[in-house]
Length: 266
Picture 1 (cartoon, rainbow, N blue to C red):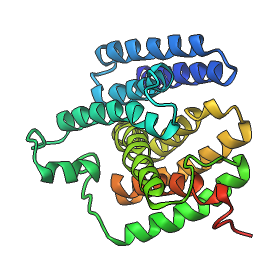
Picture 2: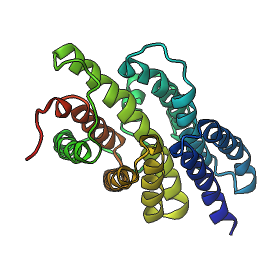
Picture 3: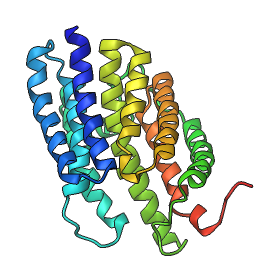
Picture 4: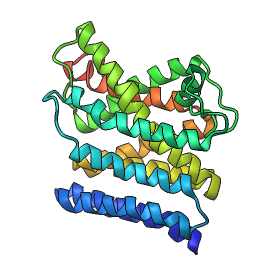
């Protein structure tokens, strides 16, 4: 009973907070996410010191707090995103260093290991064919998402400077930052305690719920499906780098070529 409550409590708090956000009640959303962060500090005392699990749930809430509360330094959305995701990646890196053996030294090899999620899942290996998989997945799913939501472009034109900037932000910050939380940390921690099927479901569900800011139920269902694919890919390969590329390249196509009418599937 204690194990189930320990898993469900942060999930319920986050879900209710995002329901308020979906409804436009920003202050209630922030208050509940702050409550969840506080609860995740205390829950390891009650539920067998499962620190990684509750650190992961706290980072989910922190993502929303930063998303809403971060001061706007640039009017351009694309330039504002790194200020939200960089603190999340830094916090995730600190959690990773505490979790993985021999990751206490600042060395480029450890950085590469971190980017691929080494140590969070056993026998993680990068394969270059993952890049092709990520490009195909990103292009096809971006077309589906464009059909469901019809996103607008985040670049002024399709010049190399704007495209390079978009690719950097979407892959390095948004794609990697979100996958680090939902797959690398949350899914891995749930897997250790509750098994792979529960971890895939929890990862995908939390990923979907945290897209409530689009205020669209069909889109939440779509994101749940995308989350299940990403969670399954992570479960099969253990590669954080793969799912980060899949996610980031999807966003790259979605906010660049497709809104301008290029690359749309018939």
